[in-house]
Length: 143
Image (tube, rainbow, N blue to C red; front, top):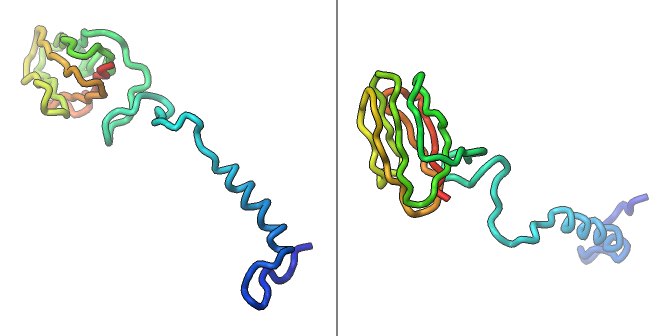
């Protein structure tokens, strides 16, 4: 069925071999294809986020976050550029609100009450966490 020899004595593909290999190469090139948009794409499941940070699949549009039962609720929020986010600690134990991006003012340890943080005007995903309780994490998507 297939030729036993793909090259001639001069080490070039024989015409019969080219007829066999050419359609395979074309099919491979078409299968690899690409997007027709030409621009960046959003990964499945969320916004691009910052390097090393998973995207946020469904952020809640709000400017209020509660610190309750040692969790941020909601943990993932979406706000407008320059928005002020209010963090309300109802646990009566110390928590912090520390942003990975050090250009955003973080909130030191506090046991109750409200603290506010003004988000940057640059769009993006800004992760934050509690330095006292490592499992408390969230993100603010500025969009």
